[in-house]
Amino acid sequence: MQYKTLGNTGLIVSRLCLGTMTFGDGSGIYKHIGNSGQQEADELVRAAFDAGVNFFDTADVYSNGQSESVLGQSFKNLGLKRSDYVLATKAYSRMGNGRNDVGASRGHIMDAVEASLKRLKTDHIDLYQIHANDTITPIEETLRALDDLVKQGKVRYVGVSNWQAWKVARAIGISEHKNLARFETVQSYYSVAGRDIEREIAPLLEAEKMGLLVWSPLAGGLLSGKFTRDNQKPEDSRRSEFNFPIVDMERAWNIIDVLVPIANAHGCTPARVALAWLLSKSVVTSIIMGAKKISQLEDNLAAVELQLTEEDIAKLDAVSTLPPEYPGWMLDTQGADRLGPVDLWAKASS
Image 1 (cartoon, rainbow, N blue to C red):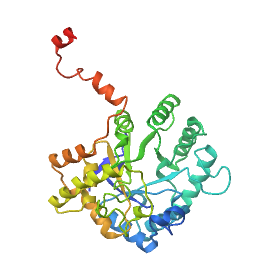
Image 2 (image 1 turned 180 degrees about the horizontal axis):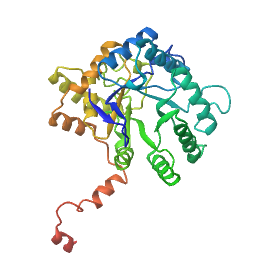
Image 3 (image 1 turned 180 degrees about the vertical axis):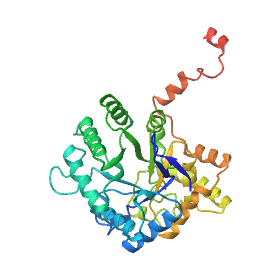
């Protein structure tokens, strides 16, 4: 296993993280994702931990709290020391029928953290993340609530998921100005089939020394090897029933056309290559794996041992490159001679 510090902190986490969205009965939209019971969950947690994974991610909304309950019980059943694993969960999503049973307000955060601590059977959460963008609550209200949780010892670090780059930057500025606990991580969708975060979010993370936690690294199973141009809806894949995350499918088929031969050359699955490509990106702290079976988990874990060649990475980079978008193409044009050669004659004659 490989390890990295969690953003600009001293906390060390494995570069592969076990995501537990599949834990629980799969109620609601999660019926398309998985329904791992306690025994299955225990087996997955044990296999991941034995392979060196010390990082586990969940959320209160997964199967309406059951994911947290099952994960917390797994740690107890397996007798794992609390100091031996890093526990991350998230809050924001609707957890009741009341007007305030959703969002990133102080009221909901304070209610949500107590419920999560109880379900997880622990006295603290290592990384507490705001799961979504609240368009109503002022950022400072959210940050002050999280800072209070850190001071109370219920939460060690805080992060955010699915926010725009400008809003994350603003939150960092407020935290520094008000001396509040700052977001140390951003949890975002990132895959070789979905590189949108490279436009604004990834540069922000590198500038602010924040950690990137990747969700859906296989684009909802699209990069698992099951999907091809000739088999676009395999029966044994959740993406055939739950088309998420959004992907440009024609572009994805071109990527898979390159991904599969590279996997064949290495004697492994396309999924393992897709994960190894992500691990090659310096901005990535940890990749969240969502395995339902031990065989899937073992294949994902093997990605840390796969050494892609420079040619492999270059091919995948080329076929998956983002189309030009303003202001990016203008920034590249106007900044071209800042570090490169300067043609003074061309300048003088223009």
